[in-house]
Length: 105
Image 1 (cartoon, rainbow, N blue to C red):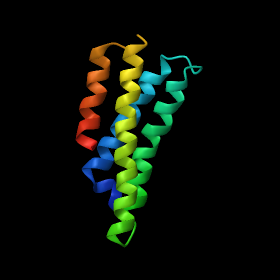
Image 2: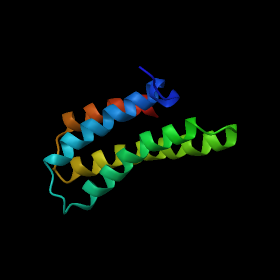
Image 3: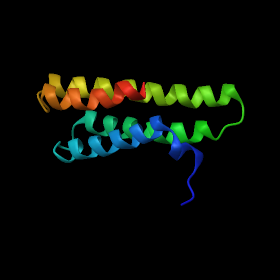
Image 4: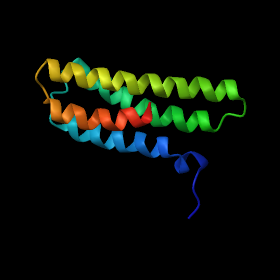
């Protein structure tokens, strides 16, 4: 099977894994929560930036996209903290998501 180069990257695969985890989490949250939309956007941004950055030809361009992906991963971690603080999810759920995010960062 043919694959794109970015699909071979472990960090890309982990980002896709987090998107799936976030989607399950978001299904149980009210869409009216601002943090729900923020988590969805930040989670989606990670693999998109990794894929686009991996296709860039100069190190500076690649670095910019990978930095954006890293920032989105950190934003996702903060979203999980907010959800715990607002008692929308428990610490264990947050911890599971953060384990994946640590690998991405």
